[in-house]
Length: 361
Image (cartoon, rainbow, N blue to C red; front, side, top):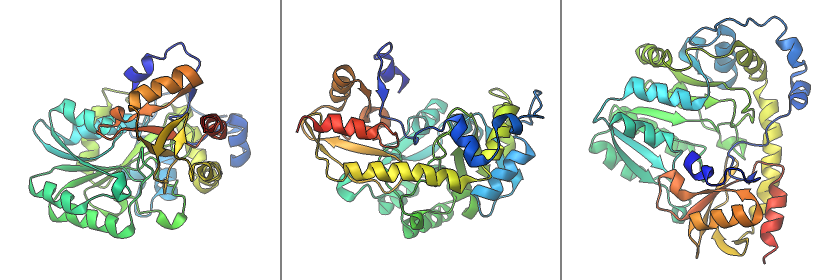
């Protein structure tokens, strides 16, 4: 993704690819918390934090975001990518078999590949409303699989699993003794609250849940992510890897994240209001900047995967960047052969983007 963005360096582009809702301003967040950042940080230590994260942060995560998790099951990281890197390197070895749902966020595939794993993919298809083919999942498990990597709510399509599908995935992983790594950074952004699923780590003994404050909570300026897992041996290995990376988080970030994560529902509600308002703008869209598109309306999150009918995705992204000043991402960045672009609709600038895109109708 970085390499794709580099070709536009120096251009004053508006990001319209982002998967997080409109980021909070400091004053807006202070009004929701009911305290100023200065008050929250008044007695913060500027020394090293605990490698696994402060007790207060891990307690806030366990108690407010999970149903069957203890603070000791949580390891805090400097963002979700560090959590992914650490757990993959703690869990996987060369020649291990890994199955990944695609389209996918690149690190979910690239990190296992760099370790030397045999990475196979199972692709969601728009013609099936981005549904996961569970029969194919079992066929892949029969061929051997150490880790199954899922991401629901899904980036980039906004697809989600039903309760029944989720339960069947857990049952299949248990049956074939497969680790289940669930990238849950968009959990909480289900457009209908009834769609919200349990966290994998809450319900499966070999489940690993990844979370972060930058995505569903729209606070990328506070660099806190986390991993939740009930397996103490794996957590110990994760911390061994983390010692070669961030070692520990900033105590300032941990203090702010602790206060924020004590009131997750208020924050998520603000984000969902923006998302659902913008979602109404895409229900009838079949063209964008004069190009024909096909959009399956997302069930969750704030990104969509718009398939292009008569245009190449990368060329389309370059036209939109150079002529109209917006940066969106092509499907080639998501390990898929689908000809599509990822567009984020969590920004307050989304209505302006759609208005410009409609000017060609």
